[in-house]
Image (tube, rainbow, N blue to C red; front, side):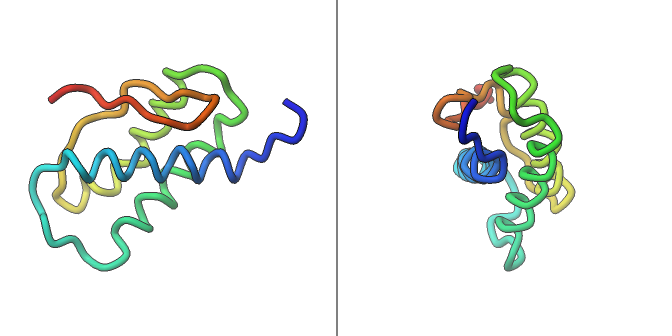
Length: 95
């Protein structure tokens, strides 16, 4: 993985996971300012602990741990089922 930048990869995956979660969310439509950024930060932190990794399930588990921030704010949504380590796209579980 020459030239791999874990922080950039973590940010791309985290933003994709949070955006997908927010599109499918249930509850608290008017979130506090900064909620999205807090969730991205928490998800990035979890991802930094497992990157670099090609394991989609391991990356998804890290995303789900980070998304707990939103759940603690009263928002529920689908879990991340898989992460494509090549482009950072996420697949959400069907609710």
